[in-house]
Image 1 (cartoon, rainbow, N blue to C red):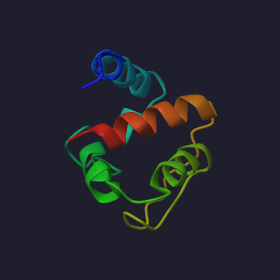
Image 2 (image 1 turned 45 degrees about the vertical axis):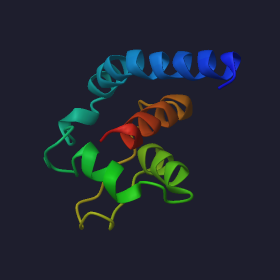
Image 3 (image 1 turned 30 degrees about the vertical axis):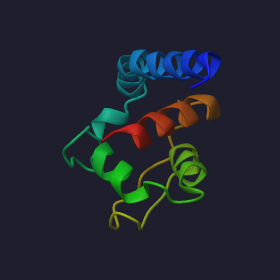
Length: 103
């Protein structure tokens, strides 16, 4: 394997490993954990269930970003997910990427 590719891959892995606590803190700060948990349904689905449902699905990331920013209802039942007006588009993208990375 090319040394540059190996170093880049290791750096990306390290960045993701460090990002998880930051993303959990951001989710807490933005009140996401009032309705969601990592591995248990509260009002909304567990983040791990979201990751499982959307794994590898084209367009899933953007759909979930839109759900965070604008709200959504119907995928997980009839309890609506309200728009989170406290989250910026960049934060929504980071949170969704993190959620989709959960196993």
